Image (cartoon, rainbow, N blue to C red; front, side):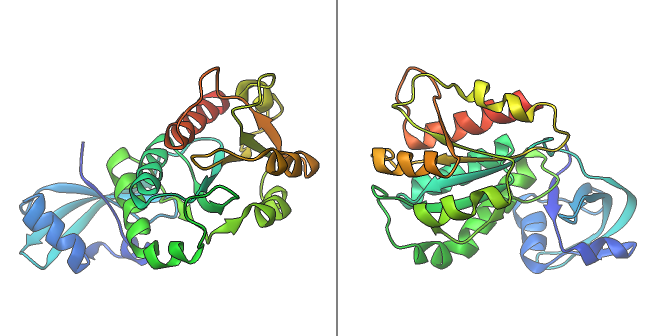
Length: 246
């Protein structure tokens, strides 16, 4: 499999590509690629190019575009995950693994029991977290980098969630009747469904929060008979939903 790199959309407008310094260092110092090696360059807008490296030094890499084609690797459904803010390591793990599964958008969520209550934490870590999303998308063969939105409170998320999604679901350990698969039936015939799934924090969502969700048309769903850690629930929900909607 060829190494993949997301560059700016302007990069594919010319037959010659000059890689940014950070990417050049990765190519030269980490991957140790040589002139003549081929890589994939993606513009994060639906196109990719096969590129032959023509010059490689520690801080500068140039390449020649061989062919341009449509980028693949994206699921039919567009999945937005609302993830309860938590410890940095756990949150970054969810960003990485759910990108690999196919999530399109992430919204950090402040709930009653979130370990992190300061939504400004997202902006302080935005550069790092966007790098994690980009690297995960490159590694797993995605055609686009997932978006990272500003954090929202539970109330704000419920107010706006239906504007951009055809269906909104909340994973809840006390829901024993409606399974995720059952709730997705209404989307299966749509060509490009837009789904939102809310994942609560370590302490779970409160009954008050679930009642508010029901009042705004968000359906609580079960992910199975066992209680999952939040990071496990995020990956399981994303994988089950995208597989069901393929």
